[in-house]
Image 1 (cartoon, rainbow, N blue to C red):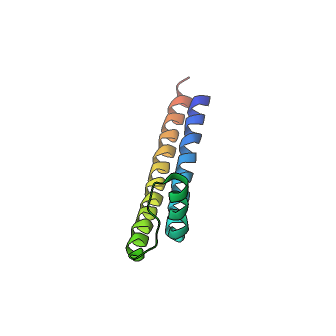
Image 2: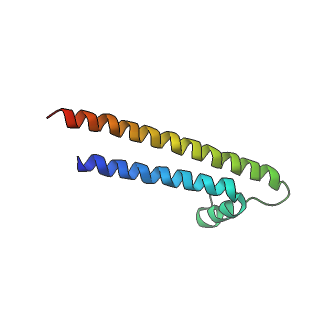
Image 3: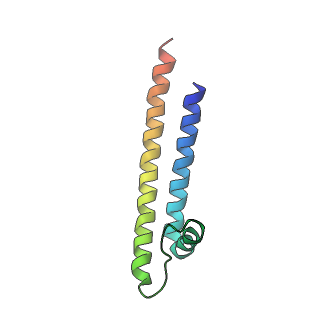
Length: 91
């Protein structure tokens, strides 16, 4: 049972990371993309000649991360409820 609790904890931490990064991309896309570019060289920085297009893409990606994080979290918790009910009734 402890392994299941640990796996659920890791999944919840992943959900928090996805939702947190998504919120940062929605609220402050320029600083977030600059940080991601400097730290991981993953995404281009928002700025330059066509900054509105990059900002819109970063904001849309952030909103998608928030929605998917909540979707994933709901499924993790739903699976936990199903497995907890099965384990507690099968003695």
